[in-house]
Image 1 (spheres, one colour):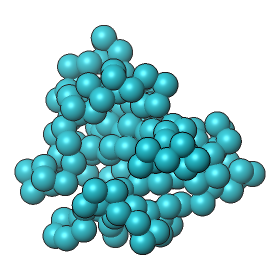
Image 2: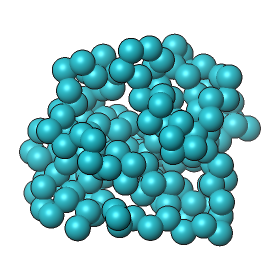
Image 3: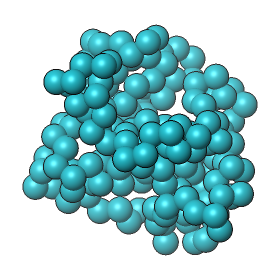
Amino acid sequence: MITLEAVTAANLDDALAVRVAPEQEHLVRPVVRSLAEAYVNPGVAWPRLVVDDGVVVAFVMAFVDSTWDDDPADVRSGVWRLNVDRHHQGRGYGTFAVRAVCDELRGRGAAACHVTYHRGPGSPEPFYARLGFVATGELSGDQTVARLALDPLAAVDRRRS
């Protein structure tokens, strides 16, 4: 059974052990950086572990109701970081994590889920496109911004089929 769990003192070492494949390291920051960002952004960061039958297989962190590019009128939520451990990729854990974030955001009343990513070799762009994210034409730094509209009436099943 796959679950989403909060990062705690009891599972911190397992969280820090999550490592993406070497060829992906330039695309996503390590979990330790994410946890530091969560610590200094309380109320905005929502870090969670993806756990399958007691084994930590991925880390995901959402941002919730965050001011976008310092524009107080533009408040967004979305996937801030997704790290699927190199030994557990290709098994649907990333999809589970993104859908779980979308479910959480929907429950908080968000109309959309945003994500940013680098384009180029190894980019997660095709992964997010398969999930329905559409590039907005915006950039955040040097990253592409994509958006997924959230149907407020849709319930996301967090169980993997």
